[in-house]
Image 1 (tube, helix red, strand yellow):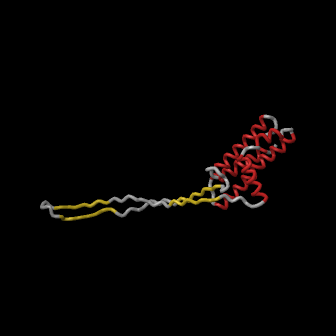
Image 2 (cartoon, rainbow, N blue to C red):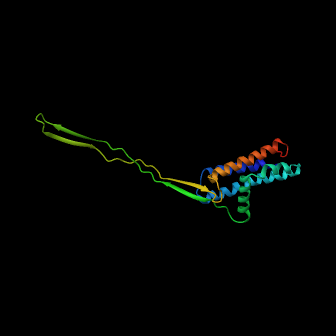
Image 3 (cartoon, one colour):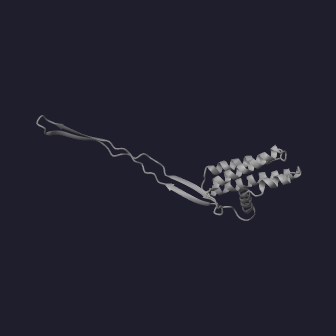
Length: 174
């Protein structure tokens, strides 16, 4: 019944996660994402049960490692301790490489003697290039190569698929 509202919330928080904020902010956005996505499934379960769709729900949720993983993450986050993914920071220090140009002019008389000598030019001014700080996040207990963003995206896609199927089969109102 309210699954679509919670899916919208989950999409909103996933959008914030994709901006890869610094660790404290990332953790807050992740917490909100976990809650919203899980609540969408909880609403689906309640509505499916009321319409006799418990078997349908169980078939779509059980046996899916990502659904179970995120259910457990949300439960830990709500009932035990905040979920804090492992953060990695990559710092790229960029050096500016300016271009220098100079001209050396020599004036000679008809006998070939130097009468005047001038050098025009200067030292290069390196262009300003800001350093780049990039954060990446991982769940230390996830066995695959995916980072938190990839897992959250896959999880949300699975939740959306379950809800779409429930609507198509009349178990959920959408």
